[in-house]
Image: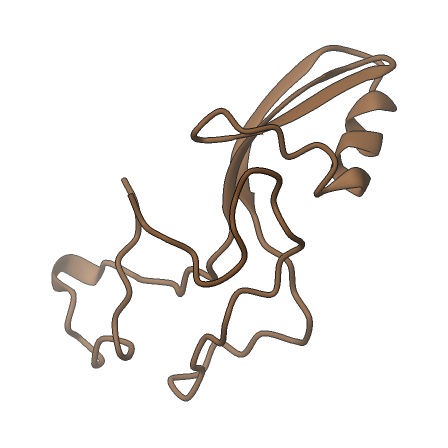
Length: 107
């Protein structure tokens, strides 16, 4: 499920039953297929992200056993605040092969 942008955090006690929430910094949904000497990083749409995130693929190649890891890649430029005053800025990620520059489009 894709996250939806909201203008702010919910007020205290807005969630029933003691549920909690956290902010989701915008990033790239990715799957890493890795093992000794090999690594491939792909987007949720199947695009190759390996060259856009060389540190991730290098770490994958250094593993001693095969691994498949599914997650969100977030590029941080400054400390992230968890206060209600936090307002996400534009994406600060490296260019992604096959994706035109500019605002990230949701599908």
